[in-house]
Length: 325
Image (cartoon, rainbow, N blue to C red; front, side, top):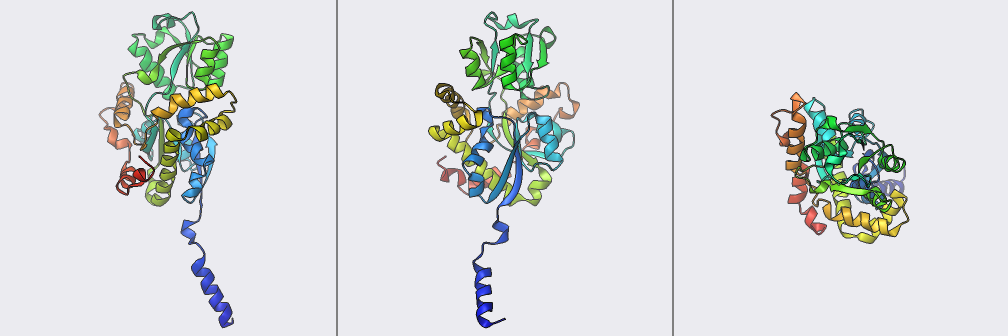
């Protein structure tokens, strides 16, 4: 080996980026293409994961139980969805913790056939939700509770995803369902009525959370922190950059109707939480609700289910201020 070659090799080793900063290949899930679910796919589409040195593949997994199962099975490293599934999983002994929440309200409205004029008219009717045990379910149950209607007085059924439930209204297999934009706007345009906006209900709820396995967080804290940075920056862009987000919504939702896209953006953007902290009252309300039927949740404190240490760290470092918030 010549001296010139040795010098060249040394310079090469000095100048190449360290392997620890190479893009990490990860898998994260998202629950669908409604606006409140957008933080992860906005981060992907705007290459914010790349910005923080991560190579993230996104997969759509509908339903909190499936999302948690994929996370615990190692198929994903990051999961997003309502706070319901991860807190129930942790209460039953699983290694799951919630890190952040981009959306801390119910993003739904109860949509009904035109002849249903008040909540009491729901008695005996068919109400479609996505699945039992998820945010659709708890939202509908809380709405019925506020209206003084017992669940056995209505026929709550699994109605499929939002497009399928909207179709169910159209063909008459459902009398009511809960929808969020853009399907909510489509339903109104088709002549269906909004009976109530669940975002105005008394109960609070962490609808879009980011959660991981506690063991993964302990072993890969820097990776999780960088993912959280991309997630938080995506939330900031959603709240502040109308045109870019509407264009992303159009691609992801496969919509061309500018009016519906604008209405969808206007509905969701102001309701996003930045910084994306978990609303602990929302966790408490959810725990209290399920504690009525789940003994493992009785007496549990909301702080048990949330690890805010990385959010606190980013706050101390001025990261959120650097994004303009």
